[in-house]
Image 1 (tube, helix red, strand yellow):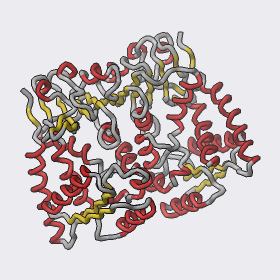
Image 2 (image 1 turned 45 degrees about the vertical axis):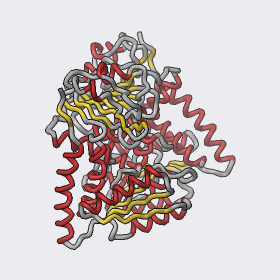
Image 3 (image 1 turned 60 degrees about the horizontal axis):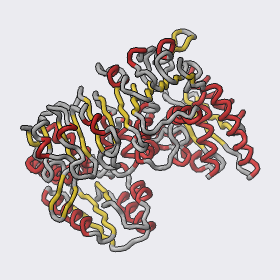
Image 4 (image 1 turned 180 degrees about the horizontal axis):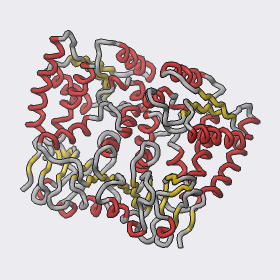
Length: 277
Length: 277
C-alpha cells in the first residue's frame, strides 16, 4: 500500500507558513496583493476565482478581483497594463479559458513577467526551460512541493509525463530539463503510452481522461502524481485508477485531495515572492 | 550502411530557394535585412558572424553588422531597442556567448519576439513549448529540415535527445511536445544515458562531447542527428562515433557536413519569414 500524498494536509502546512510570511511583509509596510482577472460568467471559473480570492485573504494576501462580465481585447490588455504599472499590485493572473473572441496568447503575453505569478506568459515558460528564475505554473510547483514535503527524491530518477497540457505537462518537462533526471513526455493517446509509463520512477499524469493510467501501466514502487480532474456529475475522478494503482505504487496522490488543494497556495506563494522583491 | 544526411547539399538547395524568395520580396519593395550584433573579439565568434554575413549577402539578404569591440549593458540594450524599432530591419541576432560582465538573459530578452530570428528570447522558447508561432532556434530548424528533405517520418516515432543545451536540446524537446511523438530528454552524463539512447527511433545528440554516443548505444535502424562540434586542433569531431554508428543507423548526419551547414540558412529563412510579414 502506497504512501498517500495528502494535498489538503500539505496545503494547510504551506498556508500556515505563507501567512507568517505575509505578516512579515506587512510589518515591513508591504501589503501583498494579487490581482485576479475574470472575464465572463462561466460557472466553474467564477467559483474557482472566488475560492482563490478567499484563500488569499485567509493567508493575508489582498485579492483584488476584477470581474469583467464582457470586455474587448483592447480593454483587457489596458487593464493588465494598468496593473503591471501599479506598484501596489504584486501579482497579476487571468483566469483561463477566456470567452470566445478574446486572444488568450496576446492576453497572457501582456502580463509583466515580474508579476506573472501563475506562470502564464510564454516568457515565463521560456525561462523555466532555460533554467532561469521565474514563477512556474502552480501545477508544476504543487508537484515539486508534494515530493519535497514527503522527502521523495526527485533527482536521479526517470520521470514520465503522460499528457502534455500547457499548464502542467509541458512546463513540468521544461523544468525537468534543468534537473539531474531523465524525462519522457508522451501524449495520453500515444499507442505506446503504457510502455513508457511503466518505465517511470516518477509518473505524472496530466491526461484529462478518467483512469487513463491503470495498475498494469505502473512500475512497482513508482511515485504517481495525478493531475486529473474529471467530473461525472458532482463526483470527480483522477486520470489514474487510484484504487488499484495504490497497491503498486510507493506513493500516490488521491483525487480529490492531491495536487488540487495545493494549487492556490502555490499561487499565493508566488505572489509573496513577487511582493518580497 | 546508413543514408548520409548531407547538410551541405541540403543547404545549397535551401539557399537556392531562399534566394528566389529574397528576389520576390525585393520585387515588392522589401529589402530583407538581418542585424548581426557581435560584441568583443573572440576569434571563433568573429569568424562565424562574418560567415553569417557572407551567406546572407549570397542569398540576397542584407547583413547589417554591428561589431562592438567593447560595450556596456545599457548601450547594448539601447542598440537592440533601436533595431527593434527600425522598420528596415527584419531580424535581430546577438552572437553568443557575450564577453564576461554582460548579462546574456537581459540582452536576449530585449530582442523583439517579432525579430528574434535566432530563437534566443525566452518568450520565443515559451511559444515553441506552447505550440505557438515563432522562430525556432536554427539548430532545431536544421534538424527538422534534414528529416523533411530526406522524407524521414518524424511523427509516430520515439525521439531521444541526449544533451540538453539551451539552443538545441531543450528547444527541440519543447517543439516535440507539440508533435505526435514521444520524446525523452537525458543529460549526456546520466549513468543510464545509453539505455535511453538505445530506445530511440530518432536520436539527437547535443552532448558537446566527442563520441559520447557509440554504436552499442544505437538501435538498429535508428535515425541519428549529431549536433556535435568538438575541435581537436583544426579537426572537428561529432558527438557520435560516425564511423561505427553508420553501420547500425538507417540515416545519420556526418560531422562536419551535417547539421552545421544548415544553421545559417535556417537563420536566413527566419529572416525572410519576418520580412514577409
